[in-house]
Image 1: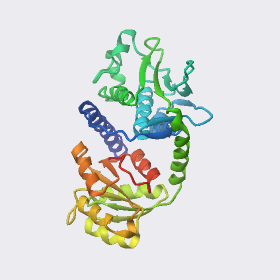
Image 2 (image 1 turned 180 degrees about the horizontal axis):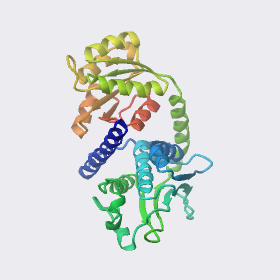
Image 3 (image 1 turned 120 degrees about the horizontal axis):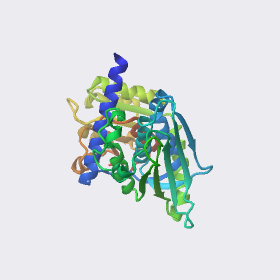
Image 4 (image 1 turned 180 degrees about the vertical axis):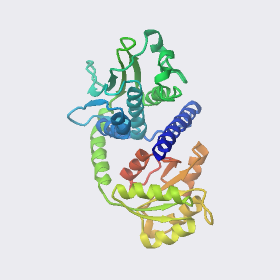
Amino acid sequence: MRDTMDRQLRHMTHLVSDLLDIARVASGKIVLQKEIVDVRAVVESAVESTAPLVEGARHRLSVTLPDGPVAIEADAVRMSQVIGNLLTNAAKYTAPGGRIALDVALDPAPEGDAVVIAVADDGIGIPAEALGAVFEMFTQVAKNIDRANGGLGIGLSLVKKLVELHGGTVRAASPGPGQGSTFTIRLPLAAQGLLQAGADGIALAQQRQQQRLRVLVADDNADAARILGSLLELEGHEVRIAADGVEALETAAAFLPQLAFLDIGMPRMDGYETARRLRAMPQLAALTLVALTGWGAAEDRARSRAAGFDRHLLKPAAAEDIRAVLAGAGRRDDQGL
């Protein structure tokens, strides 16, 4: 029963997250945290996040990556989400034990200014007359609805919109029903002048990821705080948990955290006031502050920025979002808002 509940909850959370993302894209409120990233790291993150689904269906997944770094200017979390959605789609529409291939290569075109990411499967395929509609919102190929595993036809629409926000393109191809399908993303490489800075940034991010951090989690939802704390401890960090803003200030004074996740709607003292008081503590000058909230509009992010937050995460925060914050801890800027 617990396994069933867990599957259904993860499925519902995925659907709601995709719907919220689609709404943000449509209203122009989605904020990309662009930086120079290595495509290989983005792909590895997507493969890791979809591994339970792929392995559960006994699929044979092959991944081909370039030998060296391939730098793009992108939101690493969003691009990992894009590739993860394509892998999820392939797993859903491929019979158990089928093959899925994820190939990454530089564009063979003479100009060579792009990277090509292809996800191919030997699943049920797509009829020729449906290829033009697969990226439309709520679209499902009629013959394939019985294999949709409860999907609403929003994953591919989100893929297209996010790829376009990155200046790229995505297309679908299939020889026909029963002959598999291939989804191909083409993304521009980082400008030549940014490559060295990108390589330095990637190396710095990897170094930061390996650092053990002192992390404070403040949330009056005990279960949410405990789960986030457990995830951080699994990543190798030292964690303290506070139930409200007042307790967070008391804990921070003794613990001296390098990173703090603050819920906004806490009793006794809300997250905004807690952030302002933490910023006033000279011994915490290098502290990275992350807001946790259910509100993500531009005005909400502006209010977080004004209170002193470096990042603004929507609840429930995905594991890959948390890892992205951990990789950038100690670097104070506003790009995450």
